[in-house]
Image 1 (cartoon, rainbow, N blue to C red):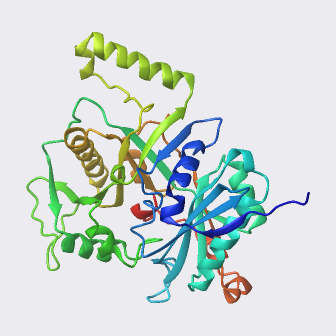
Image 2 (cartoon, rainbow, N blue to C red):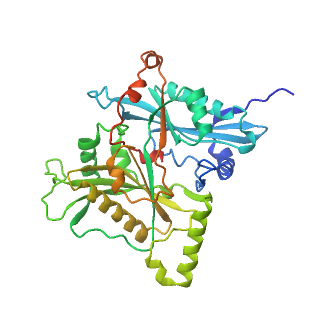
Image 3 (cartoon, rainbow, N blue to C red):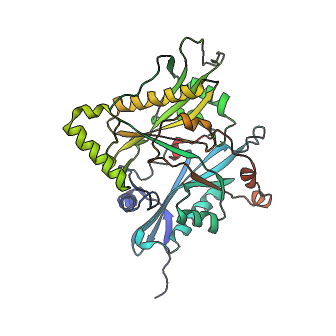
Length: 390
């Protein structure tokens, strides 16, 4: 019998939803030597891309079974930060959620899914395609970099901080205020519009129901006005919060023995000795949990590092008091951004070298090697990570 090739087609919500959810449950996220994370999309397999301006999910069928999925989104972002507008913008396609059933791997299904999604990007006039993976995920690195010609261009850090029983201390010398959506949009366009991968439709991100708000921190007592004609303090910091737990949950399926023993030990001590709840503890990641994603971090001035830390502590306390499901706070920052040293995180849960790879899709860009501008350009300190693509 000859080799049967998988059929690649668009996702059908009515026919495929249950099968895609079942596939997600059977596929791990993350390299096996570290940790398995399983996703629960809570009845909406395209939840991670639904808020994007354009999105697509493809599925692969073989032997009357759904054996693979891939998702993609398209948006306009800032890419060449040294060029004047509008030449600093491009339409980019983002690849995420590539899953192939464990029993059907190494049959070319993943490659076919990527090829078909790239065709959709090209049909919709995308200039580039990019994806993110862990540097230790060798199968993903080989697929995209070796077979499809993607080029490594950024290595941001994913920082994860558990939500604990005890509220974190926020200095009384720091004032924290919530901005209106229009104020936040103005500040982001003023301060971060030239940041790599800043989304052209930032107002839609900030106005999305999953965006819980934007907060600024500044030294108490300083005059400030964050409006259009306002006066900014010498030192200040800003971030926004996205409630990813409303879209999908995660569950730890495998972890180092030390992590497992630590979590179980603290759970037992907190039950037997209530006073231990006052000490730092690790949440139970072995049941489904949600998370907050901090995005759009910006800071200025000599005291800005302390102000960033104060904002992070504020977000932690907000999660601890308003959400029963939120067990971690996550953010992603540029690999060389010094602000990472001011963001509370656990090394055990964080990834300090996420790998971003990019590829030119248009023939003229391939001829001029425009994609190499990303690799020749020294990475900027700031990097805007769109919460719609987490």
